[in-house]
Length: 398
Ligand SMILES: O=C(O)C(=O)C[C@]1(C(=O)O)C=C[C@@H](O)C=C1
Image 1: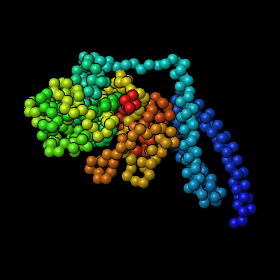
Image 2: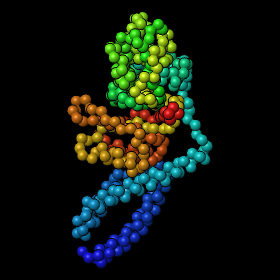
Image 3: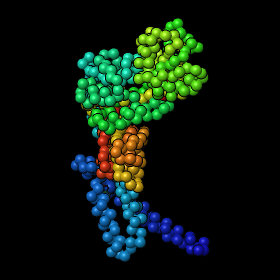
Image 4: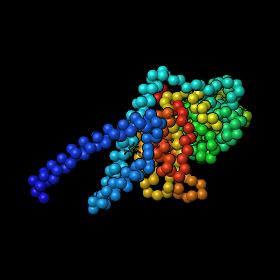
């Protein structure tokens, strides 16, 4: 092809693009008018049957004119155009909502009775554990706390309404997820109502007459051994004894009362059991944090727990075929939602199939997020909102 010919073709494309740009702008102008109507009549932004009708109509029209060589491409472009329409409509409606909120004045959520002696909060472990530390930070001293042996027992206590809240570790910044808690979230119909991040400073804790050089046995939770492995590698000849959790390990040292035995735990647990810190801050990572979730059987409890911003946690499964996860994530991308986390967990009894946990920054009061989710639900086999709550961040600590 000669250069002249190429220039000619490009000129033609330019003039078609000019027409398209004008037509697309005209189309969007109508889309905004429809958004106003939808807002006033409380209709959803997404109208799947109308979208199907549009695609079918265009395919028919192309076929009628014997022009379906590019039917597939045109269909994809139409879908993209409609996605942009929906994003525009959501943004437009969100603006109207924000404007109304401003006019009504700052609407404050009614706080639940977070510090009340009648409230019981369930946690795993014993006093002095990191879960108990997180509980103290969120609820203070004015609630009843109830300890349980296992994470499952905490879920059962909340699900049977024995406890109003439960607090559980879900992720550590250096060793990753606590998978058991993810799986229990799927099993029990409870809500996530808040989160708390706790800085983990592991210490070696022993009797007051002991020293780090005398230690022969070290008790702790396997996670704590993992998080301090670099320091422990230097403690040659010290036997590691995996135990229920860090605080129970510290209590064990107190009970055994032998200067050769120590535990890895928090400063707070050393204080509670009146023991000595033989070596402090032995984490591999300087910034070592654990994120705890707070669960409840009551969604409204989510208004009582403070945080730095709003987030929504979702759990879903999709068809086991090409593109099905992509289609869900695409909706978040098109509508410019920030994915804070994406996790997969195996589905029991379906080898190599997974369910997905997603955390999205935003609130379901945001029309755009609500309609994005409404749009996603039909693309999933199962779909559950695990909770909407204030998220914590550890920026203040860094
Ligand atoms: O017809 C509507 O309800 C529209 O809002 C327009 C439109 C489109 O772009 O054509 C946009 C979103 C709907 O899901 C369906 C169609």
